[in-house]
Length: 257
Image 1 (cartoon, rainbow, N blue to C red):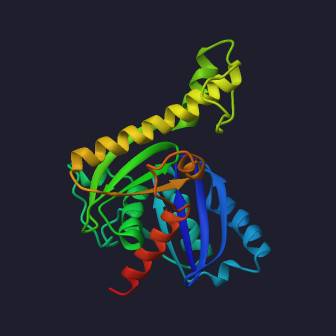
Image 2: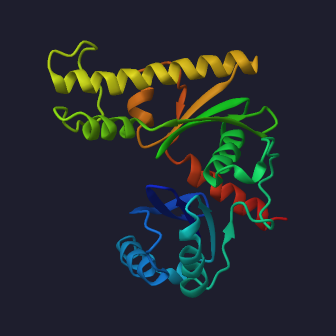
């Protein structure tokens, strides 16, 4: 079985795949101070709920954007799984796509993995909108190459900023309000956050397509993808498992080399 690890700025997502079948997926808050031992205890307990053990794992692959967490994640695989993991971005890992940005090493591992998954599963050219710690718009060429994109603040950061800098504004949940015009403070804030980000999505998708000069598929992923996709035709497909599926694809391709 394969352990995939998507270690982001906010959460680290662990998933176990038995061939094409996902046997379990678990999330932990990203904390670079967490040790391999702590990961092992946490993961052992959660895997047991699904009838799995660490000994069932025969391979591992990691996409990590938190450099300080890499040591513990690699040690988890080495010490507790008896496996040397593939790590996205290292020279021995072939992504199977070209990276065409000006400084290829600066591309986030998750963005490259999403490009691989989008090309393989949906074709291209495509825009992948990843609603994570930031809202990333990543461009995938027709031949699968990663061609850069746009990085915008996440909607949650706008909520947090309003709460911090405005004394009389509360912290609100991100949800679709009944009307655009709010009749009280909370619905007015929710409208600004929700419909403001719908406007950002629609505006950036249009500008990207105009600049690219081709029709492009648009795939949404990440926690808020479903709620925003339901409010705009700019997002054609939602795939919550895009990064994890990309990791499994990359692992299998590298095993066959």
